[in-house]
Image (cartoon, rainbow, N blue to C red; front, side, top):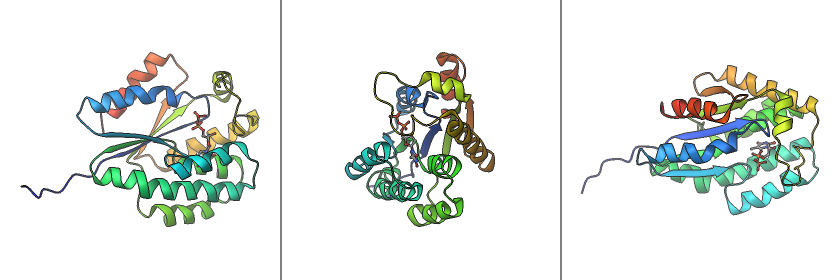
Length: 207
Ligand code: TYD
């Protein structure tokens, strides 16, 4: 028996405007990581746990104060970290999350005006030192994201917001990327899917 310590896994997050196309790339990212023999945990926020998914239903469809929204996002996140993300990283798995805390800075702070120092406090409380090792930001001009929004289901409350909201969102994401250059990769997602895939694969191969 060896008592070699398991190497901690990596935490990868995907961000972008609704309609930027990030979710489209999840299957191929998983496939690529699996070729390296890694255990992959694919998850999402808000959500990722039974309670988190219940909170997601409220968050995406019920009107509420932006600070209530922020608190519920972090409540779901606390559950997600404790039950899914941290155990997976500990056993050496790679965790791929469709959105994480950068989305709170973009949506609740950037677009809805919640004070970022409040989010910073919640972030410290809920995450401690946990931060993504790598964040892929799928960036597209606002009018492109609006055009790409899925039409085969009813839009959620965020997707029903106007162009001004999305413009603030995009700027907030780009500012987050500038402030955290070591982990952020900004991807120009305003090009053909196969071209974006080549870029994504190249970035993923570096982690
Ligand atoms: P999204 O990830 O776009 O899922 P789908 O592809 O199924 O539409 O939806 C999640 C929504 O939740 C999205 O509009 C952004 C929002 N959100 C926040 O406002 N704050 C957050 O902290 C997170 C994680 C998500």
